[in-house]
Length: 450
Image (cartoon, rainbow, N blue to C red; front, side):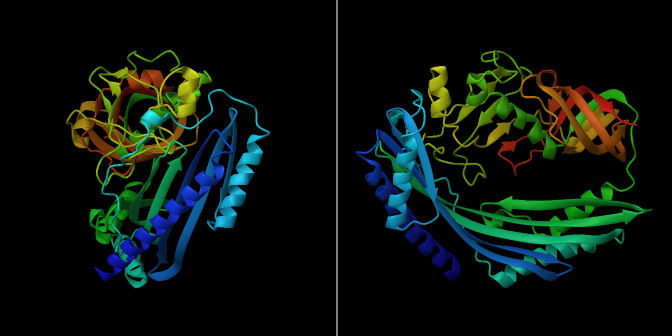
């Protein structure tokens, strides 16, 4: 308890210092610019790694930076500094002002609209400092690694265990009078091992992450899951080239919808560089599927009261009954499109994709025969056409049951068709990502094998 109280006291002091830094920068920029915005952050924590129970690395870090953007006569200048002294802040502000003199004017540039700002930022329960000493952090990492090593004699090597715990403060202010900040924590524990059988070696990992230490799985759970995942990959086979149903396991299904983020981002829309350019208000997913955004989810890993421009975040339906309801807009992209910012400067905030209640085992039964994808490789996705082609590994399924692991295959399709034809989304929700969804069943994809 004493350690946690000490951290809380330190963070409160840091926040006051950062607020003063932001206020100083804004005051220096006032009168010399038409508008300005300042963001400053400070992150402190410990990272520990072990291998065969021995300490490999113990790293304490404390990193901070201030960034300022000024706007003058529709010209923009930005500068940053890791030195928060008054003299350094003054130099940084002047550097931004000097840069703005040489940039081209842009009528869409400027501070976020005042009526959209988060002058009152809600507490999202993101700050849970850990009472973990360096010795305890080492023990957690070693236990996770040891649990994996002891699981099976086929596990012959290890890349180690790791534990990370960090706390941070973010403060944002602008020339509209906004000055807000919040504190947050993030803790994680992982292990990675190598298994060997009949000359074949396979590697996999497992991890747990949360805002509070109490949200983490135990080291023994992490190790056991790491061992299970690694052993399941042993003796993979290759597949013949074919077309077959595909299940994207929850850990990779999040990426399937991650491509949607870029496709509906305002920057892609105003540049006309997205295959969903004319899709606003149209159906792009099955009519039973809705994507909700919950930026104020308590303790959420992607929760935030405001975006990186200070615009307040709100609960939204990004997709409603399969229909695309809005673009993801920053202040700049919104102005380019004649719209208002949706609070997405800096990314998305806790997308939730509701499943249809089927367990992973029930999805296997529904698929019957086909491919389960658990790993994807490469970046073969076209933002212009939606064509999708990526290396993959996973498991072959027959009669609703996993038969054997597979590797060295490529799966291909088009994202428009893949999204529209989703058969079901499972209830095995992956919660460790800014996109939370279960496994996804597609009726057919091209599979290139041997």
